[in-house]
Image (cartoon, rainbow, N blue to C red; front, side, top):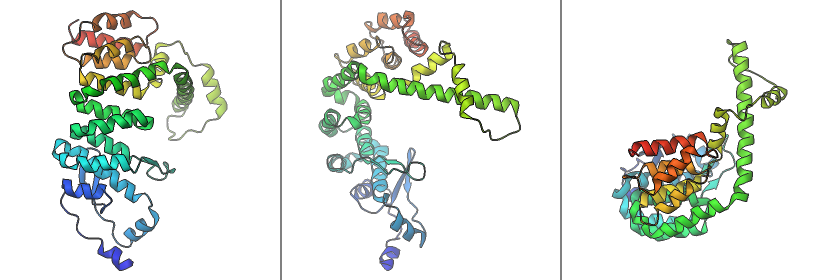
Length: 320
């Protein structure tokens, strides 16, 4: 076994679509995706590689995810890899939470990386499979919608499905309310702790570490001004719905005749108006039907500062 492991430490091949497909399908882990760059992976020196092989049970999943990301970075040049990506989309592996995010790699996003790659490559063969994922696998809704956004007008046939996802998110007020409440509670704790640390830093400017009691945090919580513009702006930000926002982005990118009304309608939702105004502001020329709806956001007492600012920017950028 040791001889076989040492023998596997050959020189990696040049970056190529074929090599990435082999890695995606479970072949040698030769290419690494780091940010927006794909490079040859440096094999660990023996005996470190032996310990990695024995102890790192997630290496195969990381290898496949990196291969998908590298293929996505190649964009349209990786069209020949679409069948392999679709096979990986259908058969797995899925994203996996390793359960040790603080000490290891955390979530390994294999399927998400495959979906993202299909969007960046921009091949119409991915539309049907992506639509099935969107319709049946809610856990991958955001990344799938972002892939459809990348496909742009090619995804016009899925505008109805995307709108249905958006409508369902808007209609799910009972489900959204507790999620927003939890986010606001976390925001309050964060702001209170920040206030305590800032006070200690002013009192002890030469210290590099501050220890405080939970009683201090509780006292700071009682002094939070929840009516202040800064607090309301922070609260508006934590109650976002990334799936709904991704649906708005996909509809704006498709730019079909039926895509505009759902985006304009979303302006009426205070929690979604910021994203809707942002997407409308990217459409040139600004559709006339959006102008009164954006102006209504600016004068609305129920919309937050971020939504009003986004609506104002959309109108100014379009000379309206």
